[in-house]
Length: 152
Image (cartoon, rainbow, N blue to C red; front, side):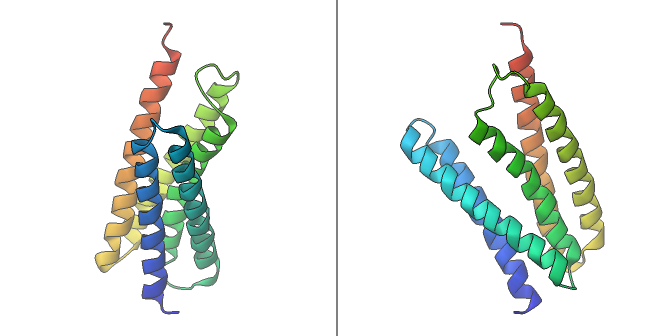
């Protein structure tokens, strides 16, 4: 396949992943529908992550786009693991998870910033968009962390 087809697969995978994340948030009231959308988003996210890793290792051009997708999905992978193990405010070692997540998020933001500078032409919009969504995700996790540490 050509390089543009690989890029379209990455964009489509990340877009579908985002769509199912939004659908899982919208259907939070109905537990069974939300669980279905969460499973779909996990499957699509892992498939896109595998595609990005494969492309980063075996494709010679646009390595920074593949790396940007990998670091973007790594933060979501951390959230998926936290969701599956049932992390909440009463979890005993929740602080350890937050510290690891913050390290992954900071590394992700730095790599996304570097990939913005390394990509050329219109393809630069992809890491910019991933960086924007990563920033929103980090702000959301910081708010959740602050709320969980309040004494009441």
